[in-house]
Image 1 (spheres, rainbow, N blue to C red):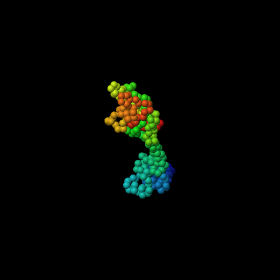
Image 2: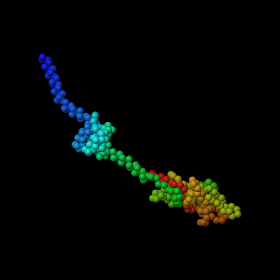
Image 3: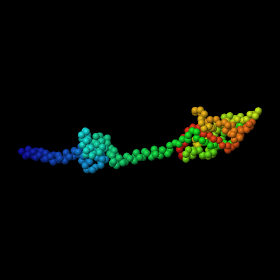
Length: 267
């Protein structure tokens, strides 16, 4: 009899113990399974989006209702879009995506950090010296049809700075080069000498700016138009009937850029 009574007492104690723990135990479970009401409670407490989103992400389980009617109710309660997105897809959301919160602010410097290179690249955009630009040269040597031969190099220098706006492409004194294309000394029967030259280039730093002797091109793709010095210098008395063509060092010569030239960025 005593044993039966003892068993009843034990059972009653167990029932009472479970009954006493049940409310707390149920509450503990509810903490791990977030619902729409939990989110509404957190919003009403004034918690920021980043805190709410982090809470959603860290919850072991969620039971959010995200049907159309539930979404309408959430929006009516002023739940933000980042929080709603986290409710729809809890594991894909990130706290740094919360709009207007520190996470979003920390993302801004990254986008700004990518901007300075583009801005810095704008001034570095290449300048182009256009084809047909005037180039003032002068001879750096004496030249004569009596002594010149075909394919001889002709040394010239830049007589004035070659500029593009405020940018100096090549400074006065920069070396330039030409090539004798036809040389014939004065002959019998009063035949005068002949001397033709093709302009090649002027140096701009380590680069070469291609040159020609006429303002307009004489044929597509033709580089370095031949310059007939007998024509260029006849009017100023450098050619006389029955005489050789004589050109003195320092004699000016007009030339033109033969093709667009991309000005190298300053180092």
